[in-house]
Length: 299
Image (tube, rainbow, N blue to C red; front, side, top):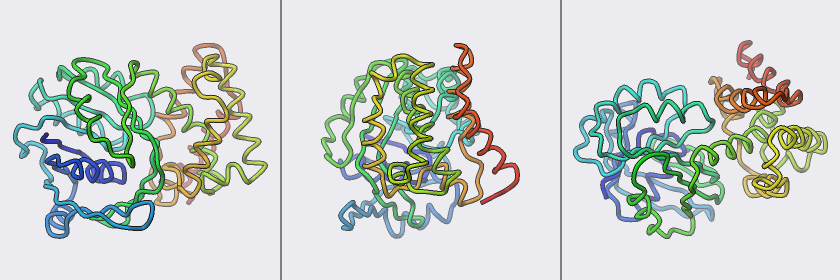
């Protein structure tokens, strides 16, 4: 299978590494020629959970249009970069399936306006961290869920055959619900870790952080009654334990002085709750705190 991965961040590099390990031909589309050259020269290294390393040869380019006849395009960039990517994807043949790997909800309707016949979405719960231009560290086991929103799911069944225990894949029926559930988990972890500047695991060991996280969960469960069944609080605790040493994406954005995805994640959930008549006061306060930090340039 000829797979293109757009985006050489932590998630993009980790996915590219696992795909290459499954003997697929992988092309990583990067933003800078320097990184494309480094990847061709040094190959892509993945630091495993146990500290060992795997190295895989992949192709790399800065131009999506230079890749001929892809079987699948995986879009693994942050939401804020999608507008430029959409313009490139319009030129891709309609029969090429697209798989979007973003946090939040805002991209769901946008992606479905593209002309491609098959469009799917992916939610990942593994941990990943960029070490350098050609090295990514796998920092936590987690599931890769895929939901096809439009078209044929046959190609994604082929991905199931990867059978890599380090990167388990699951196909789900409702792509939008999958994204919403991931957004809920992000609402519980990301804003608090970004504001308090703590690792995910400290949400359990810091009693005040834990109290806030549980309060947000109660607010969400009141607004969205299915949450207690689909995401029991015990699952939130398990996720914090599994990714205990991880730096959340929102905290990483703060440390790097980047604009976070708080709008497409927390803002979108607040909007859904507001439409149902719920304000979610604790989560709303954290949302504005993150925005205030970004506006002031605080790190």
